[in-house]
Structure formats: structure tokens, C-alpha cells
Amino acid sequence: MKAIVFDVDDTLYDLCWPYKMAVEKRFGDEYDEIIEKLFMASRVHSDEVFEDWSSGRMSSDDMYAHRNQQSFADFGINISRETALEIQSYYKEFQKQISMTDTVKTLLAELKKMKVPMGCITNGSSANQGAKVKTLGITEWIPEKNIIISGAVGAAKPGSEIYGIAEKRLEIDRSEAWYVGDTFANDVIGAKKAGWHSIWFNRRYNEIPDIELTPDRIVYSEKDMVNAVMQLVTE
Picture (spheres, rainbow, N blue to C red):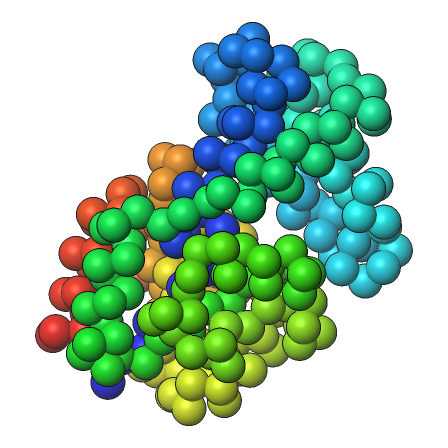
């Protein structure tokens, strides 16, 4: 039986929502027209320092300040470190209110009913990602042992080690493992290099990079994701 393993952020829920709310709390609707672009830039700048942060070479505040200041700078907007950290504090506040849509919940419930092996692989600290898992209620459908957080296991995407940990936890063969995630570099390339199949949830309609490794399937909405996953597990 095929196994389905999900990313968490911007895959099982819309990560832009708490970011949008945080920016609006600080600036009102001043940047609403570019909010998605600002959000995508913040993700890029977060990824570029993730290794330094996860290894302890960069503090959390330095990482938060970097990604927020640089994302605004990409659009010619200069914000102070103090403002960048203020946005982060609001972002954390709204992360406590995140939720999955009924579409995603129904998919997880159906997969559980079908006894499809399921898991999650997510990058980040145990505290931050663990809090998101709890807020979203993921353990209602996916066993806690099958939720692999990079900060808890000492390995992170796109490295292959964390996918190997998932294989052992779920007791699955990589030839039957499918990873669903939104980030091309971490989720698609990481999964493919680990010998997994991948579904790229291209929620933000990013351009497909011109590289040799490509996703097995591409979906652009939660409905598309549901259809692709259900087709896989019923083939």
C-alpha cells in the first residue's frame, strides 16, 4: 500500500493567513496588494538561513529579523529590526489560531478510514512545529510517532536522513512513499533524492524550476491535492 506523508506549513493549512494578519496588525491594509509576494519572499529568506539557525550559528531573533527585513527590502521597503521582530511577535500570535479546512480534514479522515499509512515531515523547532501540530489537531488522524520534526530528530529537509527516519517510523518502503509539500527545494528535491515520489502542492503558482529532478505530480489547490492523493491510494 502506498504511504502518504505530508509537509505541514502551507500544505495542510494556509501559512499566508497568519502572516497577512501579522502585517495588517502592524501596518493596516497598506501592503495588502503585495502581501502574497511579501510572504513568498519571507519564505525564501527564511530558507536561506535555515541551516545557520538550526545549527545554532544564528539566533532565532536574528533569523526572524533577517527574513522580515529582507522580504520588505525586496520591494524597496525599509523596516527596522524592531519592526521586523514586532511582525514576528504578531505572527506567532496568529499562528495560535491556524486551522485546516474541511477539505483537508475530510482527506485525512478518509485516508485513516482506509488505513493508509500517513505521516508528516516538517522543518523547524520542536516547540514551534509541535505547537502547530497541536493547534491543527493533526494527531486525530496521524499518530504522533509518525510526525517527524527536524528539530527533534537532528535532521532536516532536503537532506535524505529525515526521510529515512520517516521510513522506519511508518515501516514503509521508499518505493511506495509519496511526499506532499509546497516547497520545491525542500519538499520535491528532498523527496526525490531520498528515492520517494513527490506531489508538489504549488499553492502560490510558482514557476517550475528548469532542473532534472521534477515532481511526479503537481497540484494547485486543496481540491487538486485531494483528487491526486485519492487517485493514488485507490489505483
